[in-house]
Image (cartoon, rainbow, N blue to C red; front, side, top):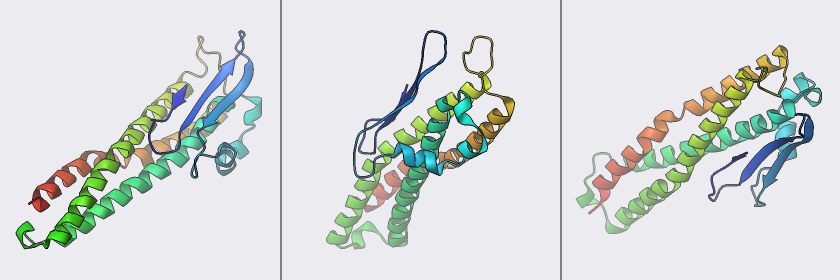
Length: 198
């Protein structure tokens, strides 16, 4: 069972169930808490092209394709949030360039502090989501690596596994590209706070 963090973002959880012999019993179970921007499971699957490349209904791929489809959408959401926070701070940094806090009007100073507080508050759930998707990537990598081991009940042929592994590698690259944001955003917020705080 994997579940997203409990925050203001749409909630998503998924699990796969089998009967006592390891056969498919209920397939994927996806649960969302309804909200205006909740994840639409069917839409995620329609947007995910892997299912058109392999006959996933004949394999155990129902275990991995829905999480992969979700992961792709989630990474896009996290990337958009990081870019938004970084752009907001760049705007403040540009405004403060060459200006001392003592020369700022009180109203302008308050506005900047509010922006920084907003960035700092919004950063933490985005960061939690980034760590979550990293754990999900690791779990899916381990799933593919051990899919045909003697102790596994899962069997996925090499062709399908290669397609899925390549897709997962690309998703991992996209997620890892924000490692710098995870480390740098708190430092930027702290530096800017020290600059604009009276």
